[in-house]
Image 1: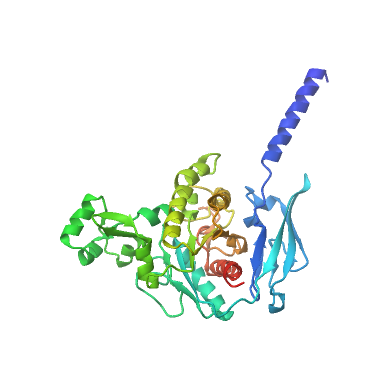
Image 2: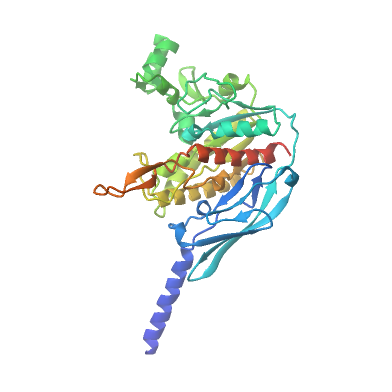
Length: 416
């Protein structure tokens, strides 16, 4: 081989190595994982990597407690473990490189805490509430003896439940189907029935001039999805009115905690190619998140504001079974990891010690934690297979796992 050809081959090999390194899957794990006595703590390997095909890699965990299974690391602390802290090392492997990625974190078990403390908590978000994880948190708090943990909000149940519905033993919330940060600050529409019942003729005319949409709908539940609880109409204009929300849900007082669980809806339609998801995050998701956080902080200067990192499901290329997504399963999961990083960056930039993120996404089974249904392998086949039917909304089991994770986070944030 002559010198020129040898140098060319070496250069190509070097470039190939650079490309391989540039595409090395990341492991996204917080510096501390919060656990609680009596509740299973999981780190599902497929949820912490942005690999396009996570099945092609091997994973393991090293820790003095728990066990490393094929799909996760799992541990259920006991009451005797309260306050315990253990190092956890998570590693990725492949046949070509061996162990090529590793992260070290700390698993911290919640202490007993002040069970008499009164805590009001308000939840803003989207249809993730349909998985009833907010009810799971309330159940866990009651089981642990925190009798004064009190969710406040406009209704209980699903994101389409009637405003004003408050069922005994269920957690109140303000989650609305399809609501992202932008909708919470801009969506102000009325059904015909609501306009007729609550607004004088002059107000209706003014609203129409402002461009407020009059929705022809016979579905009574839909009126609850048309108007953000943070907006009001006064002085001839629609305006952000966080205090008005507090007046309705908590007797005028700011809640002790405001949790926000949204953002994944934007990621369903974001192009996972370079620049695509960054454009959506910059121009929409984080742009409006900044505005929402500023409005909440102005009205509630002492509240703890929690940005949840919502989970995402299966790596199946057909993960939704519905028409609201435009990306594959792996594209959605990679977009969600971009969202998590954007949340961390935003919180760091704001520099407010009482605005934090929680990482409950690791605790949710990315396969069995989501709805699945039997479908033929193809239209000519009589054989069927189980496919993920929705990678955005968890199944009841996945919702319970998510509730357990957020419960453990809240134990650390509030009761130590």
